[in-house]
Each structure stands twice: as structure tokens, then as C-alpha cells.
Amino acid sequence: MNRLIVLLERLVVAVGIAAAMLLVPLVLATTWEVVARYAFGAPTIWAYEVGYLLTGSHFLLGLAYTLRQGEHIRIDVLSAHMAPSTRRRIDAAAYAVVLPLLVWLSVALFNYFMAGYTRGETSGQSALNMPVWPFRAVFVLSFTMFSLQVFCELLKSLMAPKNDQEAQPS
Image (cartoon, rainbow, N blue to C red; front, top):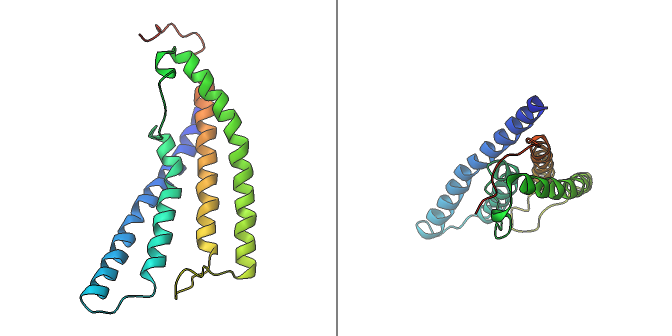
């Protein structure tokens, strides 16, 4: 089971690193737009939409990686005073509830992606009017990766030692 978790988390990390790399073209596009607009008096027709799509893609593709790193916002008012085994059981229950919803959402987003692709939908956000299917593919990939990471977190919380001798935090 640990091998499966390691394999899936390597995939999540690879997608997370790719998401971080999206900042490079985002900064370049934004810089070019500012220079073109203010130095040359010739704003671009594509920078707004490219920036919009890259920002959204960066955010979505980072979801699973953020969960893997334990960086999602968590309210620990109550759980900070619980034993680690109790926290793991609560986490396992939460992941068990969320996982089927994320899988369902991933399938629904795939259908949404296919509909946009087959109809040749475009964004209508700018004069560039990009096709929407690449961004919808990002939706599918993002929520699929998020589902995989939630599955890994569920497995990790279930595989934790059952006979905790840890003292309850004060």
C-alpha cells in the first residue's frame, strides 16, 4: 500500500511542479502587456485572456500538491486538543466523505470538457477568443489529481498505528 501512495504522490508532485512553472509564462505575458501598453501605446489582444487562464490553471493544478504538503487552511481549534488517533479517525471520515464527491466531480468535468471540445466552444473573454477545451482539460486534471491525493490521505490516515500510546496534547 505504501508503494501505491508513493507512486500516486510522485504524480501529484510532478503536476504541482508543472503548476509552479506556469508562473513563468504568466509573468512574461503580464510584463509584455505592461510594456506594450505603456511604452509602445499598443496593448495586446491576448494578454488578459492568457493571464486569466494561466492564473486559474496555476491555482487549480496546485490543489493536490497543497494537500500533500499539508498546507490547506485547517481550523484546529478543537482538533489541537485531541489525541492523534482521534484526529486521524476524523480525517479518515472526512476524506471518505469527500472522495466520492471529488470522483463524481472529476467525471462531470470530463463530460464538460468533452462537450466544449466537440462543440468547438470559445471563451468570448477577449478578441483572442481562445478555445475553452484546454482550460477544461485543466479542470479535469486538477480534480483528478486532487481525488488521488485525497485517496492517498485516506489511506495514510487508515494505515496509521492503531495502538497509539501518545499522550493527549495539553
